[in-house]
Figure 1 (cartoon, helix red, strand yellow):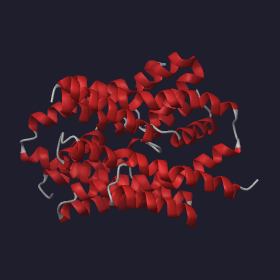
Figure 2 (cartoon, chains in turn yellow, red; figure 1 turned 90 degrees about the vertical axis):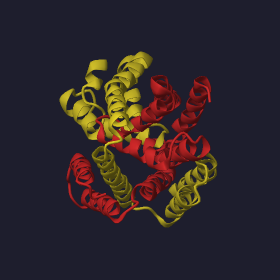
Figure 3 (spheres, one colour; figure 1 turned 120 degrees about the vertical axis):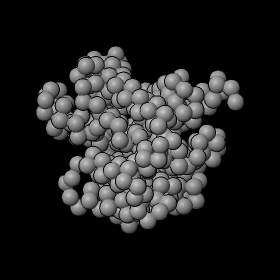
Figure 4 (cartoon, chains in turn orange, green; figure 1 turned 90 degrees about the horizontal axis):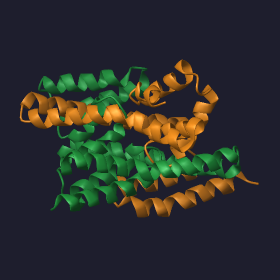
Length: 165
Length: 176
């Protein structure tokens, strides 16, 4: 379990390839089902997926092993990169390269958000909740906890009402 | 600031972020930046963006920016504490919620929670992008890289790593 999950290093498409196509632990529908649930729950998505998949096969121990296996190698790699960066940050070329990566990475983040909003085809009322959230967090820089507590329950409540009986 | 104190703060802050991270760790980046930079004064906005860039460039989940922040604040112990705090609360919740959820597959409230949280999740991701962009895109070239990589990812099926690599090259060439 641990080895299986640590192999792929963690990015979502690779997780899907490993779990569904290579190992055959989950069917494609199961994977989509698990993923959509994990996106509604708080926490890093891929970590949540590893918890759900691990728990399905080996209970709590499986969940822990899945999570630890998923994070161990990337953790070591990213810290090594961090050490290297701290060591060489004074070199202009390194600092500039990291700045370039940061600029590209921000673009990826924005693209993901745009793709998601296009996929979901947000309705007027849900777009309103999105807009309020965006204003509070991005423009006003309010702390996120009160914003979430204020906006998430009514948004879920509205979804409940709209679904009808 | 003693190390023990810093570790306790890391644990407390990231445990809260863990439970707020609906839709993934990227949703809480603005709040993470606010806490790390403005509240605790552990680093500058630019340093935070640099750590985020490293986590993006490295293989593995991008949530590992948390480990880098912890490491910067309190060394290896900080990295372990921050990562564990970011994962543990949401993992425990997920573990129990998954059991409960599977028993009631297809119930109406599940679809409602997902539908209700979806717009907030998207807005949080967008907010993360904008907040970071304000830090990173300090000149025209950096803004152009951001715009180009966003556009390419939306309109083509290019692998994100190419865009990361192109960003690194453009940076190293001294354009940003």
